[in-house]
Length: 529
Image (tube, rainbow, N blue to C red; front, side):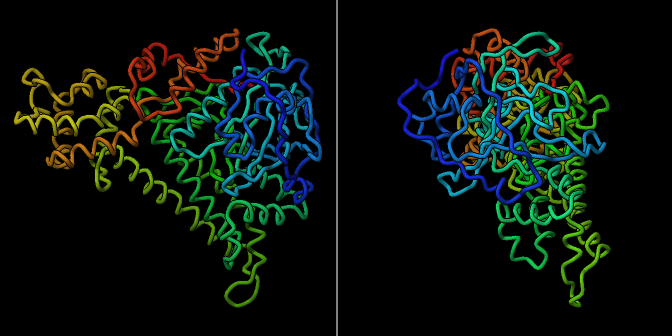
């Protein structure tokens, strides 16, 4: 294991604020992380450090290593373990909380945004429920890798500032494995589950809601009903997030309310995975026996989670004056909130359709074309990412064929085709109904138009939204297995590839290729706790 940044003379730890601890007494317990016996850096995120206003030279110092392993608490810092509840697979658990995490504090980044800095895997807390509170190296590196991949894809996410080996051995089902701590950065760790915990305790929910508004949606404070405005803002943020997930084939795997942020960031990369063969019923999580969190169920589950969030705000809104100056009362508030919640499906559909139109290079959403292509993918079990990327190249190839004065045979019997611009797509789709594919291609190319300059521009636009490199599940497992055994090179190589998911580079074909069908068929993910 080697550090990404050599150790240097410390230039000063960042100043951490304690706004959450200061303002939200009753939603945490003061708690110190457990010290690590022999900390060693595995990966340090200098790009994120700079964004946070943290000097990269300090990030590579022995002092930083001590802080990020939980061994040293910076002066003036008040680490805490946050309390929250949550609905897990539909059942309510009144007490969850940070069972293996500690919030060190907050920094104001270079953009003026408040960001949490927390340690994950730093030892048992009062919320550990019998667990050891530690994290294994594999799950720590999974969260590091997936967070950085999602960030590169432009999807809101928590990120990792550091991954540090502790020098301890932890015991899991697979046996003894190296222990590690992840330093996680988030816009906040406020969850729907935080609100579910607060509403059941007197005098807390109003402070929490006002804090969330001030931190994430300050414009809501000026609304006639700030809490309804907060709900509306969170609905919008989560509609955008789920549309983003669906666009790249991301499956979270455990969309409990305690894993649903108020900020609209992806959080808690446990049994997550990426879709390969397109099928809305796809489930990889070993604990999702009924398919509750299957790929295609994610929009409906998020709406369900948001309904649980809305329930925590009813009492606050009900006390506010209505049109007649009297308190609105719960009945009126529930009616208003149902209207907002019902708007989620329409807003998500709008965003999803726009995303699919962009992925297909269309000026406007066309449900017939988008659903037709997804049906082709599903019936043939085709690779989601590879098919959209192959489709992206076709407009420019059509332009090249047109410019050369030759025909572009994207319809008709396969045996009649010569230099078909759609050959790469046909290869990914595999054998199937040739007539159905030819008919879809004919309709799609007609919608694109035939102006060469416009076709080339469409390919550029499509390739900007259709990644070539995603965290292929088998490559993630390969990298984590090697790192656990002491070889971080595959992890580093995969991380470097995923830092630019849009640009095709020579020698990286294996990173753009789906796993063999037999591998995907038996692939399962685990929570990593």
